[in-house]
Length: 354
Image (cartoon, rainbow, N blue to C red; front, top):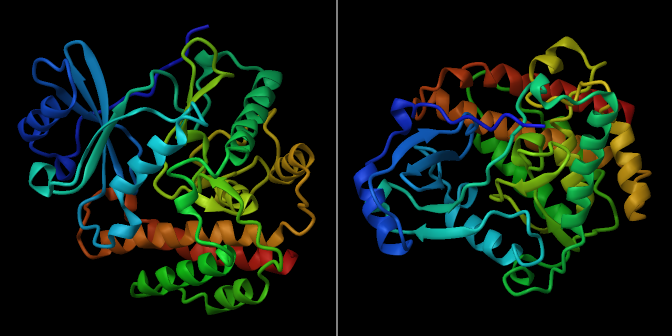
């Protein structure tokens, strides 16, 4: 069975950079590079930007923050590279880091370069060429959750990982931090959502389980499927928000993107991964499976589900604010303001149900 690889495209004009400068830097830090690379851009990148650098005999992947990003803590490429390097010995699905650059004269921002993992990255729909029937889709789904569980079992005392832990109060810090980011991302006509913020503050779990490495953005379009077997996840990408935290916060963040077949039409329009396919678990089934495999109590998952959706709402609004301020002209961001308002209403529905 042959899978369809993730296709890079022409670089958007606003995301272009000086290839010659980057090439000169890489040749100083990576042995064996020859020739001049061609550069393309991967189709993701609503937040950080990812490029394919193709040398005559080698392909590399470059990650950089978006233009106009001012809060370095939100787009810290060097931190992401450090976390990946520290995590790889205990979690082999992390791509190898090959070079890091903190000299902004090279590209205009910090960046890092990693190995390219060849395989399939799923986007909105499941490619028919993968040949997956309902049973195959189910196995893919379960394998996806199992990779997350494997991450949550990594030893956090490994060098480079224990420094990520900030002690007790992880959930409180998350609620406070993301609430502040929400207020700072406000634009004309945005919903203040103060009732949602108040509910999250008042309903934090008493038990703070900040005890494992969490990805914080675990989605199907952040994993790489083997080109020979789409049921085998060979890589996990986008470690910008990884830290030591509560595993249920990680699961809740993942499920914020989990649009299933019976969701309303508006939420269906946001779908960016094939979680609606026959054979995929529902959100409730994912939570039950995770709880059964890990032994973690998931009986009060409502808070984590609301927080995951709220955090996604903040990310969407932050991107829309950059668009509204003219820091990006990517037309796909024009509707993000409406999307953030819808997410606020969806949070309220979940709160009412909880």
